[in-house]
Amino acid sequence: MSLIIQNFENIKSLANNSNIKIIAVSKTFSYAHIKPLVDYGHNHFGENKVQEAQAKWAEIKKTKPLIKLHMIGKLQSNKAKEAVKLFDYIHSVDNQKLASLLSKHENNISKKLSYFIQVNIGNEYQKSGIDIKNLDEFFYYCTKELKLNIIGLMAIPPNDGKENFYFKNLMELNKLLGLKELSMGMSGDFKEALKYQTTFIRVGSSIFGKRT
Ligand SMILES: *Cc1c(COP(=O)(O)O)cnc(C)c1O
Image 1: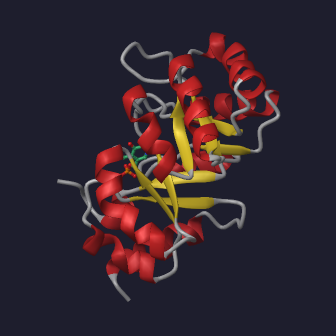
Image 2 (image 1 turned 60 degrees about the vertical axis):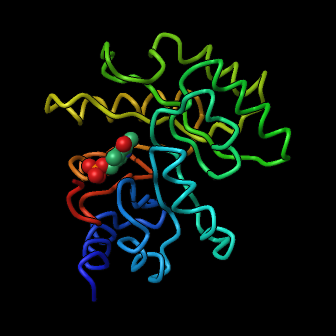
Image 3 (image 1 turned 90 degrees about the vertical axis):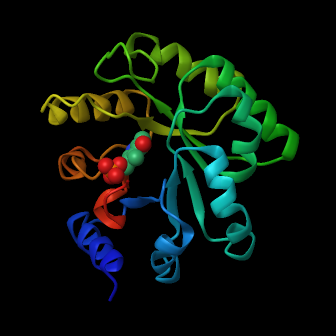
C-alpha cells in the first residue's frame, strides 16, 4: 500500500464516523502525486487556486464524474465564473459581491453548487471571512435573496492554541442558523475539530506529505 493510502486510512480511522467527509487537499501537488488516492476511489479533493485546479482537474472530472472538487481558498470575484464551472463546493464565500456573482453564474449555467460561509472566527485583522456580527445578515442575503445553497460555516482558527474554543463557537453559530454541515479541521487540528461535530475536514500535508 502506498504511503498516501496509509496516511489516508489512518485519518479515516481517527474520523471514525460515516458523517465525516475527508477533503484531501491536493493544492501544489501534481496529479501524478495524488493519483493513487483517486485510483483508491476517494472522491473529495480540495484546491485553493482556480487556475491550478482547472489545469489539474478539468479533464479528469470529465471521465470521473464522482469526483467532487472543493474550493477552499480565497476566491477573487473575477474568478467566480470559472469557479462555478469547475467546483462542486465553495468554502470561502465571505462577501456580498462574490455571493451575488456566484448566484448569477450558477443561474447562467443551471448548476447548483454547495457553499460554506467563511467566518473570521478569531476576529483577526488579516484573515478572510465574514465578521461574526455580520453573519446573520449575510446568511439571510445569501439564502433568501440569492437562493444560494448554503450548507454550513467554515473557519480557519487563529494559531494561538485555543482551537477548541473557536471550533465550539463555530459549531454553536452553525446550530443557531440551522445548518447541517461544518467545514473545520486541517492536518494540525482536525482531531480537535472532530470533538465539535465537524462534517468536512480539510487535510493536505498529513495525507500527501509536506508542500514545498
Ligand atoms: C492548505 C489548506 C488546508 C490543508 O492544510 P494542511 O495543513 O496541509 O492539512 C486546509 N484548509 C485550507 C483553507 C487550506 O488553505
